[in-house]
Image (cartoon, rainbow, N blue to C red; front, side, top):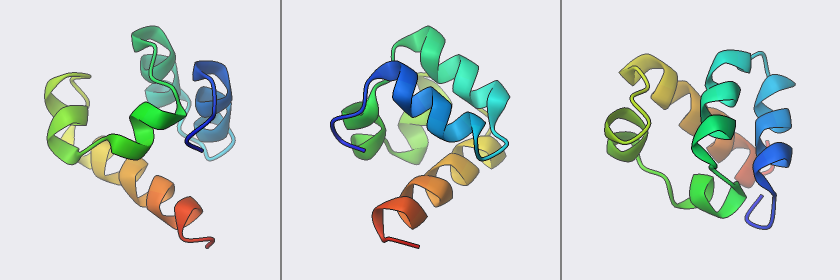
Length: 68
């Protein structure tokens, strides 16, 4: 994930039924390395995602990084 482009990261989340947040990530230029370093506060404050959506993105990210 760390080396993924903005488009690859967005596609990853689209495939996991997160199209709305994926569009927001794409619009803000968030690439894989950015997502790996993201925190709940960053997603909520900088990207203006709801707490629920931000938590869901982080759960999906963490599951992928953990190989689940």
